[in-house]
Length: 512
Image 1 (spheres, helix red, strand yellow):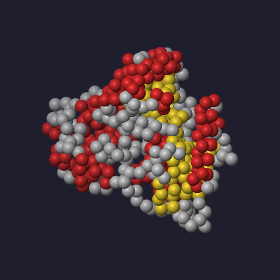
Image 2 (cartoon, one colour):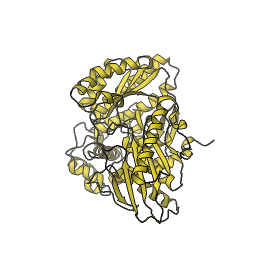
Image 3 (cartoon, rainbow, N blue to C red):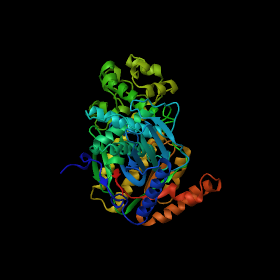
Image 4 (cartoon, rainbow, N blue to C red):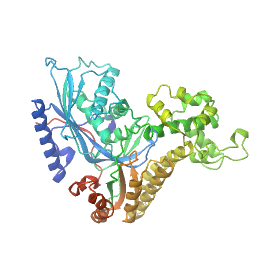
């Protein structure tokens, strides 16, 4: 039997297989009815097909997917729906018209040109659809498929994933857009290939994405978290303990990943690449070999483990932290120093200018222009220790521990992850720190930032039986002061704090 990531995106003729029953189904019906009527009112025709792709919450494994390491997210019920209609070749206007049911997002118009370059200096929400549009054509051409003459498309989007929340609203939009374009042209591909494609095409908007967000959005299975492996992409179902529930709370600090990429997200990608090069050189690779082969910290892990083995450990963090004095002269210093590196420090080790190392990556060159220093020791320490925590989390849920012991152990791992994200990776913010503390003070087994950080959400592991009380306490101790200041409306609180069970992944909907 084929693994589920080898199957195409499922196609349904009703909403029940995606949204289940009860209030989630009723809410979905209202959304689809509204989306269709708004589509007809604007474009004069109903959509041909719909695609939906969910947001996600990453339970553990932050900022390590782009380093080649496994992560453990789950899909949430909140999603992005894209309604689409392919305009006929006889229709004169060869344009892409992209609308949104939320009036906050104005109508965007683009040429029906798969080769168009996205203007990153002029950030528009419609750019995310263009990522998927370009991705579909690039992928189809690479497969030798006849894509025909580009035609106009009418598109309308309805998203319920809070923007800037760290719950992957951008990936949900790119994935749903890619699948909608695919469905409009009557095409479908294996889920793992679409996950890879959508990861690559989001880079058109300038974010060096690692692939977790797209993989879980497309490959999620209802009722399971997923251990996502990369190279090749693979998903393994992970059954979470029934007595625990994950509560997601928005810090109300918005994380604008694409806008702040050069100083935040992409900066960390560059620091990890530089850490892998310097580690490679310190562990015996010649500089040119390290520059060409050490793209991620996982590429030099084997060297780190060999080194650690000489010091009585199998943990690559040992190589980052410590060198024995009995080693030859080059190893008398620590492999990576704790003090920040300057560009000159790194260039002395590599023998090459940073601008030359990253010559083929415009987004990395933007990082170098903005960066004053690079914290290689801290970033590598986070990545290697976080990768270990993901597997410890997976091992814990499949262990023989009692449910109470299991929940406590998972909570400890989440707390350790947050400390590492906050102190070593420095991707937290004051609002997240306050929210995480409130969660722990009110009985969470563990709480941590989730997503890229620098704002967005925290996720807490809470005993199922105390979820209503827990959410009420968060409202009183974190959100009420924000409501009083007018930051959010009391009636919208359910959008910012909610419990979630693992939901299903992407789908194509052909509704009558």
